[in-house]
Amino acid sequence: MFTDRRIERHQLPYFLQVFNRLTDKPIGFLGNVSEDGLMLISQLPMMVDVDFELRLKIPTADGTFHPIDLTATCLWSHEDINPQHYDSGFSVLQAPEEYGQLITVLLHYFSFDPLQASA
Image 1 (cartoon, rainbow, N blue to C red):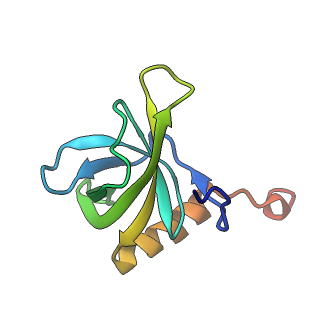
Image 2 (cartoon, rainbow, N blue to C red; image 1 turned 180 degrees about the vertical axis):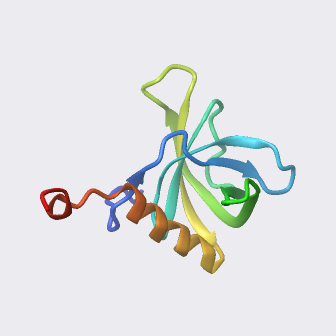
């Protein structure tokens, strides 16, 4: 199984909720994200080797939500260090251009540039 990461992932616990796109029911929160994958933190383990239709609801300035729909395969799922929580790794199969834009915005938002802090 592939375990080495080629792309840095950024931690996002409890920031963005993830929904089942078909039922619109919440299934967890983004734990981290990259162009090729994401980690979901949920209260139930996820089925491995199964494709999921996921929806991220991105808050907008006017208080509404903009959906980003993607298809991802669960590669692994195991119990989190926190009791009654599970971490699951997904490989993104299909995502709109907005998913890449979201990663760029989140990278900028959560990044700390020590050069700017000392200025």
